[in-house]
Amino acid sequence: MHDLLDWPFFEPRHRVLATELDTWAQEHLSGAHGRDVDAECRALVTALGDAGWLHHAVGDVIDTRTVCLIRQTLARHSGLADFAFAMQGLGSGAISLAGTPEQRAQFLPGVASGRTIAAFALSEPDAGSDVAAMACAARLDEGGNHYVLDGEKTWISNGGIAHQYVVFARTGDAPGARGISAFVVDADTPGFEIAERIDVIAPHPLARLRFSGCRIPVARRLGASGEGFKIAMRTLDVFRTSVAAAALGFGQRALAEGLHRARTRKMFKGVLADFQLTQAKLAQMATTLDAAMLLTYRAAWLRDQGRTVTKEAAMAKLAATEGAQQVIDAAVQLWGGLGVVSGQPVELLYREIRALRIYEGATEVQQLIIGRELLREPT
Image (cartoon, rainbow, N blue to C red):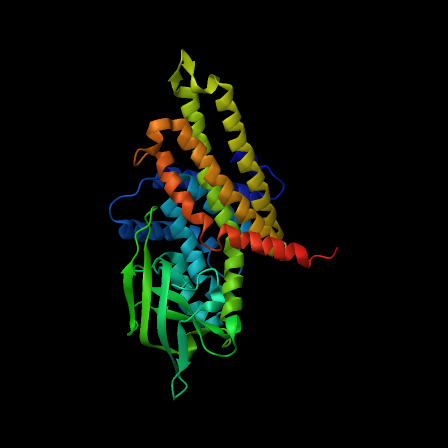
């Protein structure tokens, strides 16, 4: 991590923050999950809020390099802590970007302090990567003061524990993606329910949501009617590069575990590190991570300079998530039989990394984005 902080992408404030967070994480975080993931996640949100870390992911101005450094550091120590931090940012990002001053004052302070848990509800059973296929609908009632929301959302992180959800629904302003609007929905709103809790290989709060005649005041709409898709994409653009950073954190931990195993595992009157095959594997792991780190912090730096980073962020997420998966798999191989024992660090990392190649734009979607952007460039 110290070598990374010497790169020219960073300012002194970034180096101070990363060092302080690493010290805090060593004192407060554990990589293992307990039995009650909901309670752990709530406690982590509170702890991150009390320590002031959440303020970096919530608000009008998001410093992308800071968010990336925080996610990379947290992921290296605890996948659930990284999740808790990231979802406070993603779950409130649309409010930061498109909310009125009154909406921001109403919703953001609680999220930044860790007293309110936020969620981002975009995906549906038949509308994941293809957001334009969204079926969840919101219609104005006869009085024009409320929207009536009907439909379902699924794969919603923090589903079941969030206090507020930013929900995207079709309002019929135009066909396709142009007819979607965004709303802030409280968890206790009549007509809203958690239809199903979803268990995944790296445990975290996840749910399918159902809306049945759920009445939302017009004042809870974010931005103008029909601007929801743009708001969703702007929100994802802010945090997509940070997914790459989280993957790097997982990969760094895996490399450290692989190096430890190579140096200490006795084999054939020596240790595992004596073999050229082991050295070659470690070299590939380190090179893969460094290449992805360069792409990630290039994208973060460019965004902080006010540049559009659609292609660069997609490259970063593609390289980091796919590369970290390879690095973690190699670490499991170095650990041998112990690598697949439940609860071992590399086994936990193997489960943590897999979802990152899917959420906030699957690898295949990133490839399409990169290809599309390349074809738009002048020859």
